[in-house]
Amino acid sequence: MKVASIVGARPQFIKAAPVSRAIERYAQEHPDSGLREILVHTGQHYDYEMSEIFFRELDLKKPDYHLGVGSGSHAHQIGEMLKGIEAVLLEEKPDWALVYGDTNSTLAGALAAAHAHVPVAHVEAGLRSFNRGMPEETNRVLTDHVSSLLFCPTETAVKNLAREGIAVGVHLVGDVMCDALLANLEEAGAISTILSRLELRPREYFLATVHRAENTDDAERLGGIVEAFRKLGGSYPVIWPVHPRTRQALESYHLSPSPGAVVRLIDPISYRDMLMLEKAARLILTDSGGVQKEAYLLGVPCVTLREETEWLETVQAGWNRLAGVVVDRIVDAVSHVPRGPRRPLYGDGGAAKQIAEILANGSRPA
Picture 1: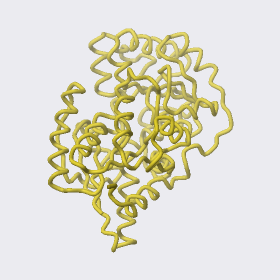
Picture 2: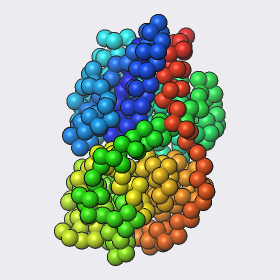
Picture 3: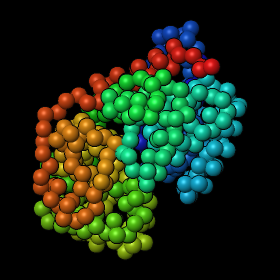
Picture 4: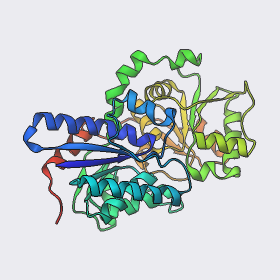
């Protein structure tokens, strides 16, 4: 049973790490299964801070194929990925193509596999923001509808699929990002020096991340976010690891905070450093789905810089508030994020193990 895992972006490296380990562990414990994985890196994220450091830190094996697609428009990226992934699938003839999340790499992997008659397994299936203006929403909907195995992180995701007529091959396994967090948190605490390097004290700073195209590609929206951060910085500094696309947008729109300002822009950081910054933050402001979940898992209040979220459970649980990009709404949300009881919404850290077992014991659909 050969599984072709297709990744390309930072969140996918984090999600793939526990699944790859679970596949390897299952193969060792069940040598007759013949289960093995080939790893395909599209190159969607390609510089050290966004790619290589995650392979090293998460102990992901070196990709068997690196397509080197790089940046570009959605159409350019997906087109180049389709060509490269198709060639790999035709060469390797895997039993499953395993894709993660909602990026261009996800959609390209799913479409290439569907056309090559390789069944698709989708990790993080069933998520919906119900905002078709988001490229990620299009990617996840199309991927789900060509998938034969759909690994859902929550009951809400299962219900979303059912409403769209998808019931066969659906498995509620929990969230692999929960697996990753639980596996790395203790070691991160032991080795990360990010707080001392940045001269930060726990609960005395806000942490921010902004990377979604709807925010970075719109000067007015990004300007509202930056202005809100400036206002919040009067209470506590805002620490902002900046995605390369976001930094380019800030410079293009002349929005970059001045040196020494209460908004501190820093370069992208490793996964474990990010966990430590999240854990010690007073509050997190983000447009990232993964960071919303990590905030909940770590017990840190979150304000989401969007009008909707795929992770509605965090809002319903009282740990996340949707604020959009209007300055006063963001500032008000920071002051009024309620904190309810935290329940284990995303599993117990065993999602990857279930995925490996289902892949190993499943058969190609007819």
